[in-house]
Image (cartoon, rainbow, N blue to C red; front, side):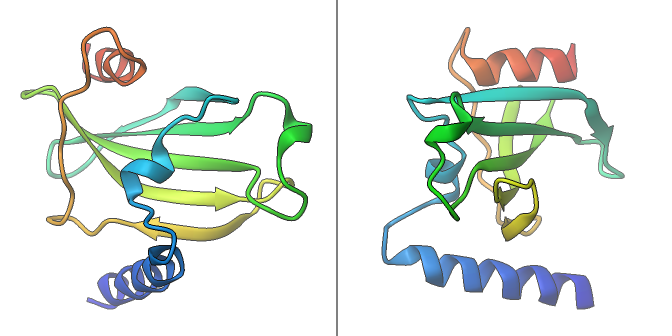
Amino acid sequence: MFRFLIGFTVMAMCNAALAGENYTVEAIARVGENEVARFYSDSVRETTGGLQVFDVVIRYAVPEDAPPGGTASRKVTYRAKCDSNELSISVIALRNARGQTTKAIAVPPGAEEYFKPERASREDDWLLRVCG
C-alpha cells in the first residue's frame, strides 16, 4: 500500500506539472525526430503476473542538442503481453546530462493502456525481441 501511495503521489505531481503542456505518457515516450532509442536486452525480465518488462532509453542523436539543465534522456519501461502482442508504458524516468533521474512518471498496475504496435515498427521489433 505504501509503494502504491508513493507511486501515485509521484505520478500526480508529474502529471500536474505536465498537464499545462498537454503531455501524455505516450507523447513523452514517443521518439522524436532528432532522437534515437536503444533497446536494452539485458533489462528484459518477467513479472510475477507473467508479463515481460523491458527498458528503452531515448536520447538526443547529438548529445549537445539537449537543452542545458534540461532533460537529456528518458528511460521508458514497457510491459509486454506476449500472448496478445501488446505493449503498455509502465514508468518513464526523465534524466539529466549526468544520467540522474530528475522526475519519474509511473503508471500504476491496472491503469495502463495496452496497444498493438504497428507492423514492422520499432515497438514491434522490441516486442519480437522480448516475446520471441
